[in-house]
Image (cartoon, rainbow, N blue to C red; front, side, top):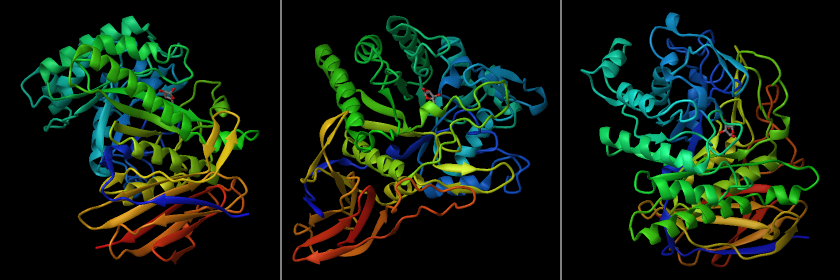
Length: 500
Ligand code: AHR
């Protein structure tokens, strides 16, 4: 049976301008994210710095705008000094976070260079686990001061005259998690983050600083943590972080496909808490959200390869299915719909580990299924996010109760007149006809419709079949002033209309 849903476009009903920083990503020293991911000096496609240019090309195609580095859990015992200076002098260390051997042949300088080549803004996370204010200040001086001081002259000695000019800094990572090295209570972290932020702002008041929110909505302290740390740091920071991973469940695919419901709740709850604190303080300052880790993650498979001390083990190299790509597409819809409050969002991660891009050492790089909705959304969701939400049938889910089967959103670019409709069908068996009322647009013409869907929603791209899952032309028809899109079951679709 074909179900029916409807989306009414009103170009005047704007939620927010599309925030390009929604299309962020994350490189952590975890598994093969760095080594044989973005960095592999022996690879035929590597440049003179060891950066894989085939990967950079895919990162550009993905449309990534900002990249968080170097962790994640890794950062909480990381000494940034280990990763700068002559290669021969860099120490090999144990990385307790991922039980890995860290050679430090990729560090700040390589990451900054990589960011420039990939055309992304670098976003650095500080170690507030085993370290503190002084090390943060040292790193800031090394990175951003032009010269004439110990730290900045050291950078120049290391071959980089110009400062890196890093604007966005995370004050630690997931400091509420007992798995975190140097894990802290909310009071302890609130104080440390505030004092670190205050000191950094004394050096440069224009920095953008991200406070650690709790590491997940299922944490027992979720909410209380945010309240406490914001009470300490409200005046000193710009954003508070949120992290969320959604795991496919073969026994409950309906809830998995509706994962965006949970992301929506995180956004509303965390910004709600921040606003309540702001109101109580009588300040007009608003704290936005840095959703700096989100993705689908087969976290229960992480144990694989997590046993011995190894260099760059294959950790969480999840093969993403079409269903996973549909969820990623719908999570992006949620982030866009909240672009009035989502200041930054980073898909976690970028290459090999929990990632849209996969590589083989010495071999090719390829696009996973989840690459496609991200890349197309990043390229074509431009202008403003419109407020319209679809109306239509619902499905009962074990985890979230009744949820709409179709989620859809439109962006409109006033300058070019282009309209993009992004839609997901979360029904496992039923196709949906989505009627888009475009009567408020003058003289629109469909440029293209693409669909990501396969007969087998479990289909994946692999080394041997890197293009098994691809966006393909979709079916649509004009019905009077409406355009009717056919959304297959478990699908992500994009329709582009030009009105220019
Ligand atoms: O992205 C993988 C890990 O997930 C990160 O290191 C950590 O911050 C989170 O728990």
